[in-house]
Length: 462
Figure 1 (cartoon, helix red, strand yellow):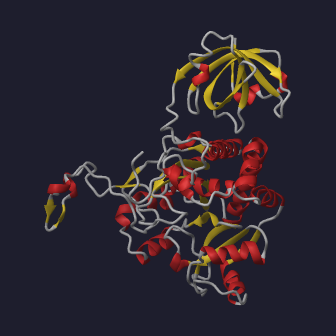
Figure 2 (cartoon, one colour; figure 1 turned 180 degrees about the horizontal axis):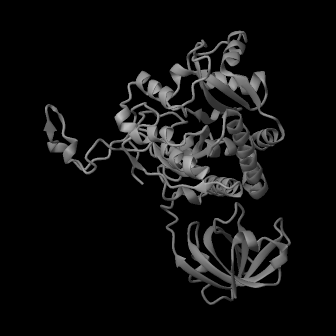
Figure 3 (tube, one colour; figure 1 turned 30 degrees about the vertical axis):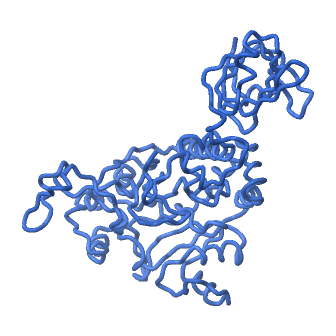
């Protein structure tokens, strides 16, 4: 007898088969005619499947009539054509109860809870419709990302989580240490890191980019996909302390190649979600944001506008729009500026490039004007920046100058400089935050609701 998922059992192709299905009770209704209706879900899809249980089953009165939401069961029976709204249903020949659920204390009853409340039950919220749909979409996006790069000849590289390098230069990094906090060893008035595990200050990584460049300059095209960390004390709906980053690095790529790759990459991911998760996406379109499907379709079908940062600033200055943050050349654009460009001025995705060198990290290639660098940000409606990247600085002397400008100790990056000494090449890459793209695709308002266990200031319980 075949085990089957709810997703498979809902297909007319399996009508007439005898199967075993395992999952959790969503609801139970008893009929006066001597049978019960069970709604069962196993997480394979949004919808439940209806199970009909006749009163002549041996455990009908002792167990089946006591089933409540959250109970776990195995059901054996025949798949039949349904006379109701669904295509199929199961006529049960046996029901085994594996785990009971106390209906008085089980939080996920019929009452609808806020997303904020559900975060308090991170161990139970995957059973909710919304978070189940988020998880399936997140899985689809992750699979699509791997498929895209694997199909294009990229190698998947695992970069370290513990590092001594600060890729972004922002300093907002979590320290990794085995030193006893109540008795920190000191030498000449400062922490004596020679007694620490790694013999130097070490941190949780903010990016795998620098290490990925090592492999790109040896193997051509690579990508990382792993957790990254920022010790930024922020409680906004867009920030997490732990999140997942996708970071491709490509040898012999210039900025325009990087733009081309980012555009086709996003279109592939969005198309895969619409194709493979239609039921979940329809749920988000109906319950969360009535424009998510249309927005994704528009992005898939349009050409991304490519616009120099300088021109973007001019457009914003001349727009007549009142912004909370002023716009001037040399400052980073805020989300409100990015959304104005994508939603009101151009009505679609925009790739901004050639940003001022003073607001970008040391590794971005300096343009001939010496005022700007070959940076790029991919902006989309509703969110603003969804991808950030650049052509990397391959010239040793310029790279050293840039590091000096940002007060970086070149001795700590000797290996990174070596890449420019031995067979340097033009190369480029970008970063995409997985949670940011899941949030965009689903229309979920808070980034804490698109990651299984959010890590934010004061929150590390689960």
